[in-house]
Structure formats: C-alpha cells, structure tokens
Length: 171
Image (cartoon, rainbow, N blue to C red; front, side):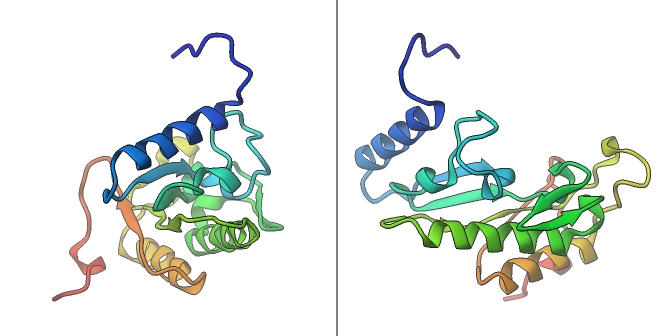
C-alpha cells in the first residue's frame, strides 16, 4: 500500500483509521491485533505502524501476539533476557504483559483492554534446539502468565486451527 507523500507517521495513520472506525460503528467492539514486540519497544521503533501508547486510545481492545517463537534469540523483555524465547513460554508472556501493563498505565485516557494472542503452534523454522513442540503444557504456562500479569482474557492461535480440548473450561 502506498500512502503517497505524507507528513504523518505510520502509527498516526493507523490510529486515525481506528478512531474513525470506532466513531462510525457505535456499539461495535473494535479490537486491534498488534505485534507483541510493541509492548517492549519504545515508540514505533520497528516502523510497523504500531505504537503501544497510542493504538489503544480510541478502541476497546488490543490483542498483542505474544508468541514466544516470534521473539529474537536473546531478546530482552522487561529487563529479562530470553536466550531462547520459545523455550520459556511463561516467562516471555508474563514479562511482555507486565511491561505492557506498566506502559499503558501511564497513558491518560487509554481505553483499550488487553486480550493477548497466545501461541498454540510449534515453530520448527526457528531451528533445532531453539523451539519446542507446543501442546497443553506450553499453552497452560502462557495462560497462567496472562493471569499472573493481572489479565483475564486471551485468544489462542494455531494456523491449523487445532486446539487441545483440555485447555478450555467445561461448562
């Protein structure tokens, strides 16, 4: 997509659209899926059009994709280094959400709740020894991290749409 010559930053264009969408659809819950790394990165340092402090000002939810497999080897999150993030699903999700919570707590008028996406898939593409097979235990670790960080809601993602039943509470 080419926005032409604009003086606006990418995140400003996206936030403007989200505010417009919310205004034009009163009564509709508006949510934005965002990269998990924006919870750690100051401003829009990746130049992806997502700035944590701004993206949730006019919408109902943000859903950071806090998939441990998507963090770089040796990634530092909330001052904690993760040599192999995929091997520590609890730690990566917990530290990311703590950092997220701290940052948005300082933004006056921030409206969006946080409902993170959790990893329910294995990521062999990150290389042998750097990933693990994701199943019930790894998903439960992430859910516990969400709860321990003070959040209640979460969304699972598996590109094959296969989710273990044991994860979900019985009615």
